[in-house]
Length: 97
Image 1 (cartoon, rainbow, N blue to C red):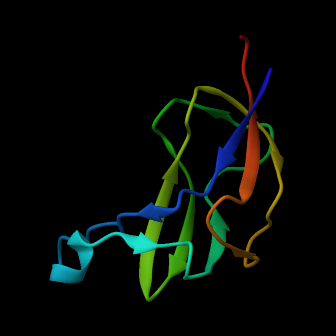
Image 2: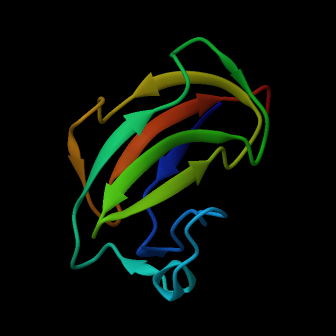
Image 3: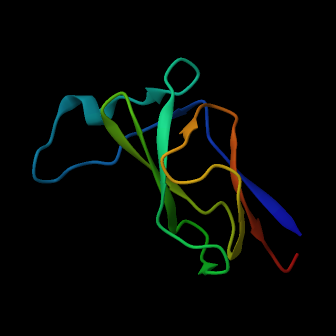
């Protein structure tokens, strides 16, 4: 069964331990901000639930998107350096369910 990877309405930025900033504690509102996507995994790679799949850059913050379920990255709907926003399906994970 294919499970979608959906960009949420808001998302906390990845924390930078070297340069902490109060802005890292505020979620980025993806309903009003668009981001640029960068994949960390290739189609066909196995992924575990919670494992980082891709990163988005929005509002000068890096957002890390994790796998909602374990399985195999089956499809990318938005490719590297393409724009995404809230509600967009970033890709699909094939599961055994």
